[in-house]
Amino acid sequence: MKVGIIGSGDVGQTLATAFLTEGHEVMLGTRNPDKEEVKNWKSKNPKGQTGTFEATAQFGEMLVLSVAGSAAESAVQQAGLSNFAGKVVIDTTNPIAAAPPESGVLKFFTEQNSSLMEKIQGLIPEASVVKAFNSVGNALMYKPQLPGGKPTMFICGNNAAARTTVTDILTAFGWETEDMGTAVAARAIEPLCILWCIPGFLQNRWNHAFKLLKP
Image (cartoon, rainbow, N blue to C red):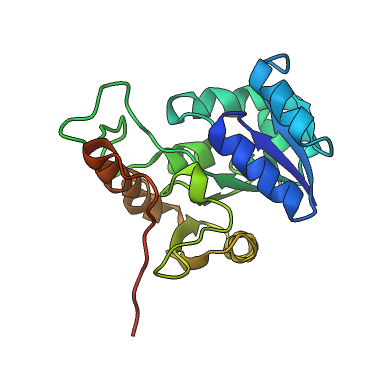
């Protein structure tokens, strides 16, 4: 499968390398293909391609949105709204506000009864957006090895078939998946980022993940 990664930061690079490792064709999308970190990624991953957001959105049969939450809507616009139509889009973003955390607690720019994912889905109504990879650090996104076993990734999206596709990817990446239903569930899933970050800010512990225990 051709996978386009819109965003060339740590998350984008991690997922791009993971998809390459799993045998997919990958293009890492960036606003500036001449950035040093993009060139470094390309030198370490010679099978990978790099390009602009628009070229990446055109390239990918599946797309991954991995920019800062504050830049998500503009990145989608830059990539070209029509280039998302009919595609599964994995949304890794979180609506983190510019304000510093308070006692380790991040602030969001969304309200409790809304989510960034819902805004993104509204921009690209012909795409099937699925929330995933937003509740863990990039170091554990691919094949996490933790004493408690496979961690849990919570996902949601309006298209059931798209959620199944993303579940299959998560399984290949070493995760168990909890499907939380439609995009409205992103209102609960996005704040998991806040909870995940608190031990990091307060105790400098960043190598953990969530696990849902079931009978």
